[in-house]
Length: 333
Image (cartoon, rainbow, N blue to C red; front, top):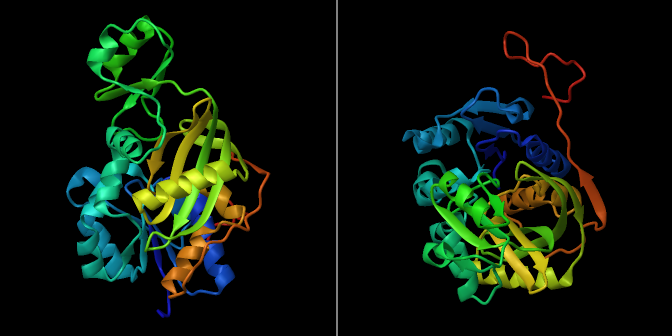
């Protein structure tokens, strides 16, 4: 067992809650180590809640992987945690190289899994091939003469965070929306209650925790209000999905309960923005990762709290002319 366990959170951005969850888990377990945050912007809020912060090149710069490798060497990183969709493919593609050169584990699923999840058409096809329900997907030829069965839902094939997603209630709206999206996919609009399911799997794709939560309110594609619930129908279906896909780490699944049953929206093979809700309810993926890094063997646990509601909100920090936090009452380290 390593004397210290240092975690590197990439593209930290606004993930203040997640940084705090890692630090809380570390302290609760009595582990020595740092939570290091990296971002391309020196004004990313999460940087100021980390034990150490580093600035990295943009993901598409051609220098990103080398920068990650160098940080891991300098900071003696044990685990690399990605947080945004746009870095998943490049990290999965370079996983073996990073781990060989640094000794750090990369918390990412196999490249084949990432390719399924990062392309919405690949996701759709995978789900259909494995017997899961999804809204009907239309080709451009099918949609050209479509005059009924609205509303439709339009989104980019490789989209993220609900950017450039639209609902079209008629033909005129559809024609106005389509030119706005570079590579659109068009589906039937799903009517029904929307859920996010946080699943944590160990490095052998064994499910350790599974937590459904209702998306009460969403802002800019990220959950703003949510309720952790128990739903055996959702749990059984998502468990079957994880057994077919075989990802690792923290996975975020979005779905709706419609008149057809459980219909899937997307699978995000990373910590979602609302993951701290499930973590704080007791399905602690951060603690589980520390335990795995200590060499512990984990088994499925279903003892998280339910029927608890989370309300997320914005907060501000003030920096002086030297980029140091001004508020003396802040809980920053």
